[in-house]
Image 1 (tube, rainbow, N blue to C red):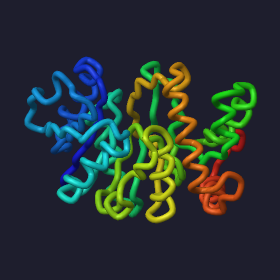
Image 2: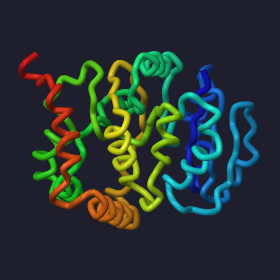
Image 3: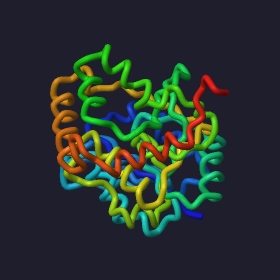
Image 4: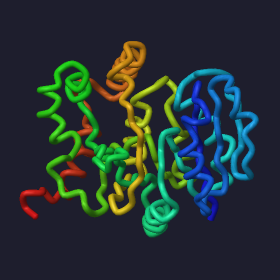
Length: 270
């Protein structure tokens, strides 16, 4: 079994990436780590490790663009392909858990439980969003808190594997043949929403499974909440997403969300 991983960097220092590289390189079952540089890093091209392959992209054309470079060049050589953020930590034993589970399933995409360093849940398993979900989270915290209860599946007992249509892009474990058939990310999304788009396409065609019995740490800063330029990029991607799938009428979204909720066990009933 061959497992490859890709990371996309843009102006990241070695220290920014050290914990993620350490996790990937220490995991014996991961054979190659493709480090895609969307900038001109002063360290990455000189970084040497038997597992790490450095790829300089043609420029900063986005998160999905960078990962697609790695997918198109290397995914055919692998059985599983991990899309990994540069701010992730995990142990080999936790990765082995989700890999062993994936080996028993026919679905194409798997996500472990994602937590902050404190152990707090990041709710990486979500319903497909409505426009109101996303814009409320940026501009109305009170409304967002109410909507998030459903959107982030907070009322569900997610203590066992579930079909969930939107799995966070920070740690996406794909079966390589499925990822290749999906043709990777839609590069129209420069940054943000590309994971929602890819996850829902995989959910429709192959299935997507949230596996909460394995855990990884994500040092998530929610930069678009603090940086006006990134907020603009997030809004632009949200507009592209809803232009693609529908602002108010999105039948496939409704079907996929209902499929998730139909299997639900609510916390108050357990």
